[in-house]
Image 1 (cartoon, rainbow, N blue to C red):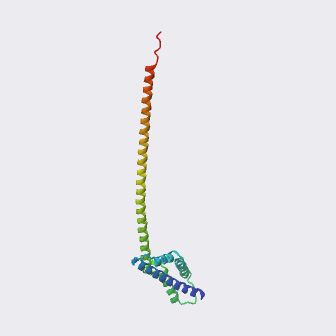
Image 2 (image 1 turned 30 degrees about the horizontal axis):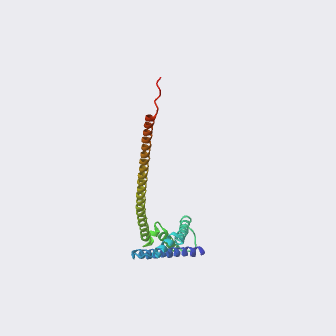
Image 3 (image 1 turned 135 degrees about the horizontal axis):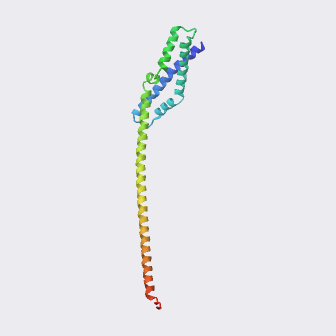
Length: 187
């Protein structure tokens, strides 16, 4: 008897959880459509999706599915009528069947998609601003590189000029020394 109550309670919890998720999703969509800067309802919705609410929903669904499998495989004999068990089977399939979250809620999938799209747009905008920043950085880097190259070119020209001047002075000095030198006596 305790199992039957537990099973009924689990089904009721699943119904309540789906209703809670749907209400939270609807509030989030309303807040997004109002273009409000405050996104507390969406934060709450994502906390339900990523948190204990969804964990409890999955846990309860797993428990009632397990009951269903045991009932089908072992044809559990109990004090409950076949009609009660049939209703439970329908509830299990209806509330925890394939794609149950999309099928049993009106707003959950839509809210989740809107939030994902919004996050993608924010990431895209971040990506665009990052690319612009990178281009600006590359531009500054190129200017610095050109400035450094010009500086090195000027330094090389100055050194070349100094070397040319030294060479010219050295050649003049050598010529002066040749002129001023005493010729060697011839043998």
